[in-house]
Amino acid sequence: MDILNQLFSTFKVTSQIFHNGQYCGNWSIDTSGTQYMSFHIVNHGRCFLTVEDDPEVFTLEKGDVVLFPNDSKHCITNDESFSQPINQAETISFSEGIINDGTGLICGYFAHNHPLIRNVTAYLPNKVLLKRADLTQKNSSLTFLLEALLKESLSGDVGVELVMNKIAEALLALIFRQHLPTSQGIIAAMAHPQLSKVIQAIHEEPEAKWTVDSMAELCFLSRAKFSDLFKSVLDESPMNYLTQWRISIAYRMLADEKVSTLQAALACGYDNESSFSKAFKRILGISPGAVRAGESSINIA
Image (cartoon, rainbow, N blue to C red; front, top):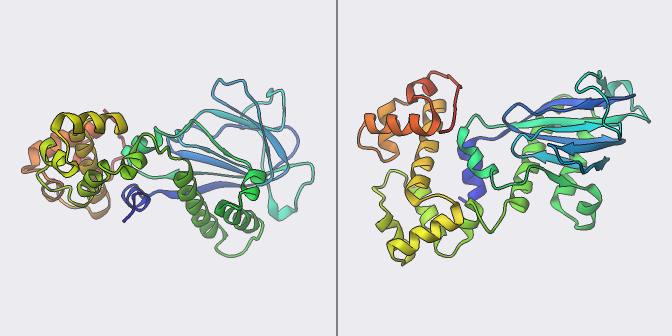
């Protein structure tokens, strides 16, 4: 299983499109605050974008996509002066026909219900802006998915929401593949000729009795050189990465399969429930039992 498959299956990222319509007149929106990756796709018309406190203004046109990997505060509006009140305008359904002087927007977020996905998105910029014109020139696979999504958004057919969300999930996978940096982070580690062996082994056998020495042996490096290399690429120690991956697996088992705390502990390399529970709460700020019960108040330590 390649790294994208591992990440998506572990974090279970799903698209939730919450707006598929158009604005006319003066309007302004900011959809940040969900703690998820959010995205906007222009269906028709033109609008303007600013991100955080950056004064730079970006023009968005039909087929352009903007993704906010870390839920960055933003403003999208028809008003170049950015003077319109946020989230006050009413939206108009596409079923009423395309409004020529309006702006159509597909807006959504990628839900994941997993706190450690931030370890991946932290390596992405505060925004990923994809211009339709650039994608078309490159004959990118993203172009075909975007065209399908835009067409589906206007269809009104049965199952349109399901189809649009599945297309959006495929778009995210391609964006991750093209935009996750290859110099640092998990993608870089998986591409590294030495570190990839360790990452793959940890992912395949999280329950193994790993030590820094046993990881270093897989890379044919000394303990010190291995630790320095690992830290330089992943910005954390080997044992800390191992702990976080184990907790990721345990979280999924507890939340989805409702296994017992002891079962999760043993499956992830812990000898007893007590040490596992302490590590789990230290990393996620919530107990294994609370996750199994469906509580979602999670804070990353």
